[in-house]
Image (cartoon, rainbow, N blue to C red; front, side):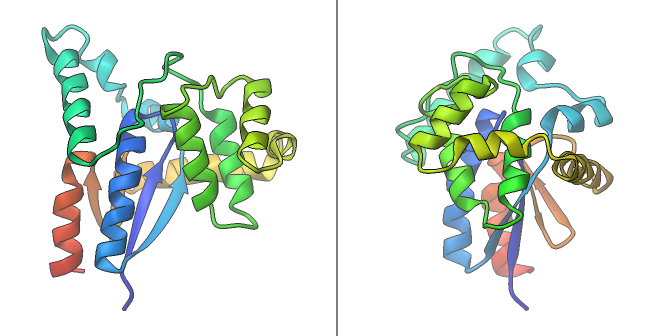
Length: 202
């Protein structure tokens, strides 16, 4: 039986960017197929009464400073030298996520996701601005206008909502989340544990 990693994904989380590159390496090392499932992080938060870490721990002295330091250490360890916090954070990722669903109807989403995470977390673009969105994807070799127009497709909207609800129904409360079969792993800090599971349990 082939192994697979399902990545419950939204561009809006810096940890989704960090996890994307490390989980790709895990998939390569273990021979697992990486499947990306686009979901709305905001919808997951709303359904599970959760909120972003920077809001959740805003009143905890030193917590957000440590959160940023942990990101710095993670980048250093995994040689993610291009990462930068998006100056427009938080960015509404609805356009990005709907276009991801639309693109995935006829293609693997890998190239789209790779381009999008770099736009968000390397170039620091304001990807909820339609003009910025179109130009960025044109520059990356996509048809930016067609992607933008696809975000208004009712089937695309419905699929993204269905993906999000399905993730919640399976116990997802935040992103990045991963599934190996029915086993869920949450957060970039548990990717190593997931790799062990793939090698020993899957």
